[in-house]
Every structure is written in structure tokens, then in C-alpha cells.
Length: 299
Image 1: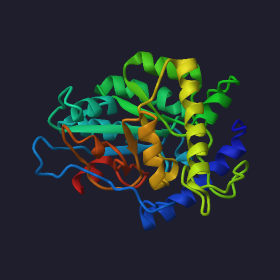
Image 2: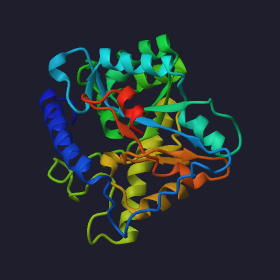
Image 3: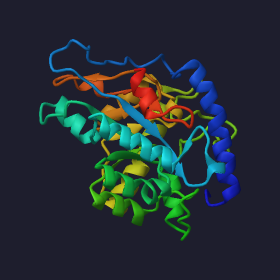
Image 4: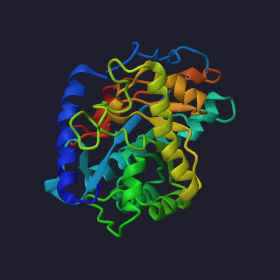
């Protein structure tokens, strides 16, 4: 169970190491070659540039700051920059509607995402979202939320969101939610990872049939969990660790997902009538070294 602080510390240490590898080689595709990333061209009619920022944890403890956890003050500075420079935070559902010809987007849209579903996204994030009129997408790891819903620990410095808090976030109108797997947020060597799988990627030598069945089963667990306890049916899938297999995109589309998020750092262009551009969307990691102002000025 993910209820012991020591395990949380070890978890962060592992993902920090993984981040160094991923940042060096970019996104890694396994199993049958990479899926084609189909982004609208910048000059395509009605194409809109869409930067997506990837956050993880927020903290008020300076000793907790690392590549995946930034200070609350830095987060507030990001929101202030966005507001002062004319950006409007939009939901992924707004982006999907725009692509499907069912709505409009503001002049300078930005999507703010939080991976893994930490309690601090609510405790520290919601008040600032309300102050700066922002909104964002939280990607839930089903097993983490399920386990924390069984205990009363809501320490914002390490706890994961439980059902009650997810419902409060939903009711605030400031958050929507994505599926970040049920139990595939793992790397080889982690306890319980019997398949030695990297995120939701296909294992070398694994048949397409078995991979499809395992991925579908994992995704359905989180979908059913969020539907039963929170009245949510996510339309966005966020790849754990950015590990993608070509087959995964077919599985997601077949299950009715409208978009997927990667960890590749690149600009996105979206346009009406091009639903393919919503899959494998790229995101900029907001670590403790690079502010949103720096990220957006270097796109």
C-alpha cells in the first residue's frame, strides 16, 4: 500500500532518476514502433497553438522541492505570469469541443495539468486557482486514490487524493480529471511490478492480444472507480512516465477516450475537424529550475 512516508520518499527518488533518463532521450515508444503524432500545422485554418504545462506536487516545505515538486510561491508566480500576459487556462474538455467544432477557445489558451493526484493539488492549488481564475486537469492513479480513500491521512506534503477530496475539487468547477492508469504507474524493479513493465508500455515479447487485455483491464479499473465514487468518466488518458506503445492509442480510441497526454516537450497546434491531433499531446514539465515564464518564452 502507498500509505507509508518512506515508500513515498523512495517513489519520488525513483521518478526523479527516471526523469533524468526521459529528459535526455525524449519520449520513448515501445512495442511495434511509435504512434504517429498528428498535430495540426501552424498555418492550418483555425489552428490554435496550445501549450500544456505538466505539474506534479506543490509544497510549503523548502526541503521537499525537487524536479517534481515545486514551492507554492513558485506556483503562484506561474499563475500570476499567465494572468498578466493574457493567457486563459482552459479545460481539456474545452479543447476537445473546439476540435470537434462545438466551441471556441480564447486567444491565448493554456492547459495546466497535475500528474498523479496529490492532496496538495487541492490544499494549495485550489485557493490559488480561485484567486487567479485558473483551472486544470488532474491525472488520477487509481490505486493511489483507492488506498488513500481507506485511511484518514490527508497530509498535503505527501498524501494522495481520496474520493471525498476529488468530489470537492469537481464541485469547485476548477478541476477536471484524467485517467493515469490504475496500477501501471510503475518502473521495472518497483514492488508489485511483476511484468517489469515501464508505465503503460508494452513489454518486450508480449503479444498484442495480451497487452491489449492487460492495458484495457487496468484502464477500466480507474474508470469504474471514478465513476462509482465520484461520478466521473474521464475522456483523457495520461501516459505514466510518458511510456507509449503504438497499440495503446488504438485501445484508448476504442474505449472512447478523446485525447491522450505524453511527456514529450514540444508545441501543440490543434484545429477543428482534426481529432487525431488530440492524441499524444505534448507537455512542458514545470520542474524546480524552470518557471512557466521561461517555458513559454522558449517555445
